[in-house]
Amino acid sequence: MRVACIAVVLLIAAFAIHWTMWRIRIPRRQTFVLLVIFTTTLLVGLTATAGLSIFTGYSLCGLHGFWECLQVAIFHIAWMLAYVVAYSALEERSPSMAILTQIANSKKQGRSREELEENFKGFCPIEIRVNAMIRDHMIDQLDGDYALTAKGRQWARVFSTWRTLLGFAKGG
Image 1 (cartoon, rainbow, N blue to C red):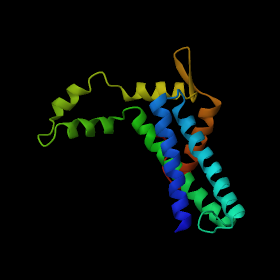
Image 2 (image 1 turned 120 degrees about the vertical axis):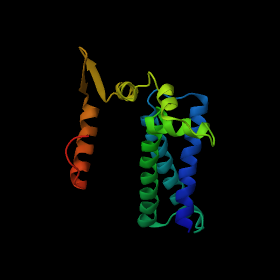
Image 3 (image 1 turned 120 degrees about the horizontal axis):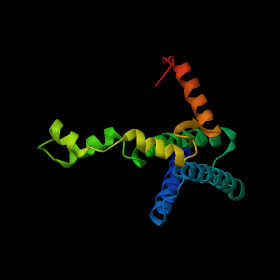
Image 4 (image 1 turned 90 degrees about the vertical axis):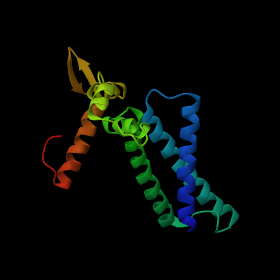
């Protein structure tokens, strides 16, 4: 229970730092900053809790040994990655989120297909994602064409490998 509590406290601390920073100023490279916040919180938290138990000898406050630190790290990293993926969907309005929000705002009366289509005229999710990928240095625009950057090639390799491991067909 102690290990779970420490893991949850570190996760809450990372989210609180993220929330506070975004209230002050939203960074240009949001995904990168989120990864830095969560990773730094994990490293500082592991160091602090391991140090606390070594220096105080009080076993309820800190982590003891490699395996407890590893458990906290795995928990934190899994939640960090899940949060970054979810955040990217919220960062730029995804079509699914926009439709759900429109229907939710109508309360019990709902929305017709025509109303939804009218609300989304001029909404281009591809353009939004392309601009975000340019901003995050995953693609560059060269003479009207888009090309992967080194960072984009790395991510494409990760996704391709993951799809292969899961047995998905090639393509999007």
